[in-house]
Every structure is written in C-alpha cells, then in structure tokens.
Image (cartoon, rainbow, N blue to C red; front, side, top):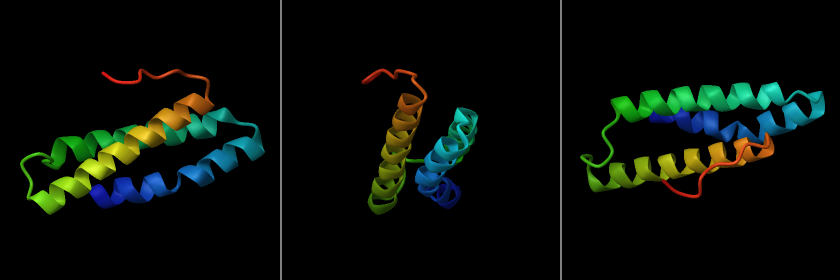
Length: 85
C-alpha cells in the first residue's frame, strides 16, 4: 500500500507540468483525487502508530509528504487549506 502511494506522490511534479502545458487544471484535480483515494486506502490498511519504530517513522513521513502534496496541489488550483486541524 505504501509503495503505491509513494510512487504516485513522486508523479506530482509531472502532473503539475502536464496540467500547465495542457491548460487543464482538471489534470491536477484528477491526480489529487487519485492521491486522496490511495492515501485513504493506505491509512485504513496500514497501522501507523502501532507499527515498529522504523516502520512508523517511514509511514509518518509518507503522511507528511501526502499532506504537503495535497496542500500544494490545492493551492495551485486556488483552493485554500487550513493550516492545521
């Protein structure tokens, strides 16, 4: 699960470039929607806080990366996100 999410998040710069070159913000919106679906599956199926320390730290880093990608992507689309919840 984490691998699929991580690989998808690595495609973020390409999705931004593709959306900009095609003048289609929907490309970025679709990418973010897919990222959110992958994150949801990851979060439901991969215990984070109950994992071993090394695995927990890696999973927390993946969560943080997803948060940054989502915030940046939504910002590019003109959608504000809360600074924290």
